[in-house]
Length: 203
Image: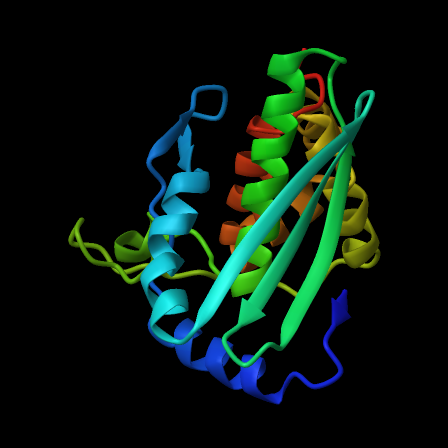
């Protein structure tokens, strides 16, 4: 990430804006995993008003070199201070639809990362034991050896699409899968959602 020489004012404004942002609504369907994810419009809806109120603006500039697609994201403040970063992926093919899908994916990923937006937890009620009359009790076992390295490996399959992530998941140790879903279910849901809209092949 690159920043202006001083970031005190933009950092203060962003902190205030983040305190007013809600979670992005999961209103787009992922039919493969029978779940939902927050699309680009939902992420914008969750942060636009708070950003504007505190003098913050986001400018995203896409570019493509064949199948290599990049999006440059610039977060600016009325003081003139700024933060900038670039993310890139390889699109499925050198065609308008594939390039457009990659751009949308990168814009969403970069925007929620820059402003600190997270999808709303659809399972919040169940996690607190509300809505079904039962208490939610989770027994957490110690972290299995090698778990963190496995999570990093799993993350590498996200940009390759749903099929790649699913194959890696099925080939993983059961204790790794159980520990992740017990201790960080939102993290696993986020991986599945991002894999479902990856611009790479979901064959």
